Length: 65
Image (cartoon, rainbow, N blue to C red; front, side):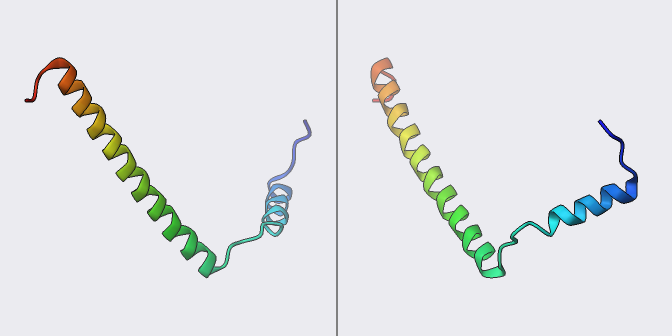
């Protein structure tokens, strides 16, 4: 593997970052909101599954009613 100088390395980094398609402010905002919505839905889903499984275990073991 060939060694590159620090200056060449920085030039390569700048060249690669110029190829990146950066999201607009609006796209970043929409994506952020969608992530929060999906996290909330996943949290509700896992909470409900946990409650159902907890109820089932309590009924099988006979503790809780």
